[in-house]
Length: 429
Image (cartoon, rainbow, N blue to C red):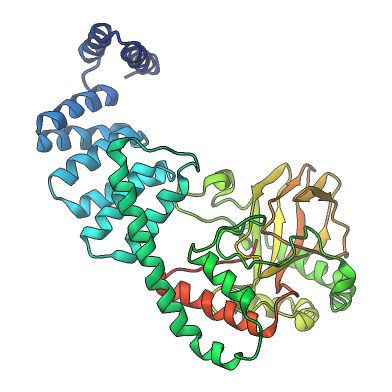
């Protein structure tokens, strides 16, 4: 089929949809018959045919038609959604899950698909996975969403599952932190208690918007006073050495770098343009709490300078320290970090004109050798409008407003959540 023929069929379907919306059902039916006569193998025609088969209970026929259609048009979410319905009706749960995963790579925010995936996890006796999918679906609904009658029971069930999972998770976490509560019994832990209540959805977040953990009553400060971190003096003093070692690394070519964003196709959301791209590349020295010994050995003066770094230590998640290289004419879209229990530090190394950084309402320019400390749970974005790459070293530290008891509790809780779900909880950016 030529592009012109494909365009014509899509125009006919668009006209049919409009006619149906206007209440002109006969016109819509005539247009659909016309499309079927002109291009019976077109994916939209096949989807229409399969839809009627589904309504008639011909699940096997619908499956066969749709499996052929997705080969021709594999990025059409409507085809996959109908195929999911056919496979569900046939009781082919493994194939249903595979089709749902494909649909969610195309439309990661498809609430209907997430709800069905959660239900399938329930049928597989995977309650934690079901709760995660239900939670994601519920979070996508607008705050003022008024569900139609046919959705209310399903949404209430989703809430009940998530609530029950939160209670199970609470018991799981309390078991992990019991010893720490006893150890720090004489200290004020009300801040941590509010943090845990928020994580378990007993308490709403107002202000900072971390994607994982919110610790109440920590100041929401975009850029912290550099003078509050005197240990940065010696790291700044080593800027020339650090830059020289980075340039030596970069001399090996772009393949030395790893794409910062590396997600399955179609699942990176606002970062899709940078997904699996070295336009935002990193060379890691520490990653998810583990030192990269080979990279540190190649940058011995940088490693020596970092000996004064008060690391945010969370097994499996932190600390992280990377050289972050942003290519020419590239922007990192607005986003928020994972937890306000830590801050990020930028040490600017190579800063051409036309680069900038906004955190919250404040925009700053990087100055080579002058470190910035900021709260990445406040929306921030980065741009390089120059014709050459920009380079900074990024590493994380604990929020200075947390006590030792609070740090220990946050660390153990974060590890417990990762253990409970079998996932990595957070990383630096």
